[in-house]
Structure formats: structure tokens, C-alpha cells
Length: 284
Image (cartoon, rainbow, N blue to C red; front, side, top):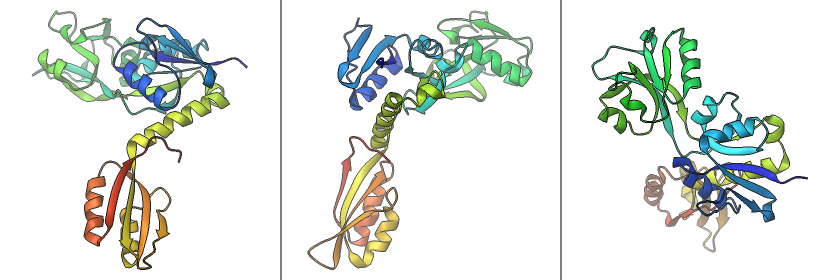
């Protein structure tokens, strides 16, 4: 059977995050600056380092089995690939923006010019809204298009919004798309290949590990029920007896967010030896 072919972003905001995640999952995908491909013989995988915008095209055509790209880039492809896993980094929003003080909204773009780098997403959205506007394709610095007089509004991927504000623009309407890094496959059949399921399972395990920590503590047995409500774990906490019959040891996975407040509450119940530990990988 041929090696699994996986495309990773070769540059841009998604590149480092993708490489770090895949490496944590046990794959050898580290490369030199100019390396275009790398073979991980141990895992029977070939990695190809491609422009993020091109990855969805290669995957949807079956040249590459799966790849990591942005949801926005995949949705803008002529033939979007199948999204199989959201990765939780590289988050952004795709928004319309107009000059500050303007009363334009996406519903009133009829006859207007909209500058963007994501033509397909914008044309599909305008069609869905029943709006007939001219889409002006630009490859970069979309936000300056209004000042240059080539557009009345823009549609762009926004992370913080600082660049828009500096250009005198403000977002209007709800986000057209909420984007992040995603794994895409050609189709459901490809996504169900054993090697692909293994890859997805490993990445998902790292994502879970980044989301949770392992919380361990000793608690008086008569406070166990209250403590278990604070730390229910995934199915139930692990409870083990101690040499003192009046105490038990408890272990449970806990979301990183709010873990300090939970530790405070456990201390208030009389728990001792409360320890939060990072998880390297997980399977749920």
C-alpha cells in the first residue's frame, strides 16, 4: 500500500502551529527552510509543504490524501475538500467592513464594489443574500482598497481588527465565516482509511491534552460526594483508598479553564495535596 500523503502549510500563520501539532502527535515533519517534502518512514507518511491556499485544491483532486489548511482557504477553493477535524488554532473571522460613519450593510451592497482576496466565499455569500455587487479581486492589503477608490467596502479575514481600524474601516454584519486551522480530506472514503483515522486520532488526542489537565488530590471520605461534583472527570473520577480509612485519593481530568477556581473550592472542602498536571496526549 502506498504511503499516506499529507500536505502541511509551508509558510504563514498556520505553518508553525501545524508543524508543532503534528510533531507532538509523533510524526517526523520537521523540515529545513527550503525542503518541499519529507518522508516519515516510521509512520509510513510523506509530508509535502505547500502554499496554504493550494492545499485544498491538491486534496480535493486526490493528488494529496489529507492536508492542514484554513477553513477560509478551503471554503474559497473551487472544489472545497471535506473538513474532518477542527484544530483550535489560527482562529479568525471573515467579515465585511465599510468606512467608519457609513450606513452601508451587506444587505445594501447592491451596485457597490467589494474588494477581497476570497472571491468564491464572497460571491456565494452575496448570492445567498440576493445582493448584486461587483467583486474586486485583490491579492493583498485589501483594507486599503477603499482609500484607493477601487472599492466601496471590503471583505477580509480578521484576527484582531487592528488593520481595519487603522485603515478607517469598521466591521458590519455578522461574520460570514469563522475560520481556524482544519484537517481536510478528499472525501469520506479517504477520511475512513486506517492511516487517516490514526492520524486524526493522534491529533485529536493532542488537542484534548491541550484543553485538559489531570487534577489529583486527597479528600476526607465524607466530602467525596461534594468533591466529585467539582471534578466529575470524563465519565467519573478515579477514587482510590488510602491507608487512612477516613481519606481517599481522587484523580480526574479537568478543563484548564477554571481549574484554579476548582482547586480553591477543593481546598475549601478540606482537600490536601491538590496537584494539577499537564497531559501530553489523550484518547477519550
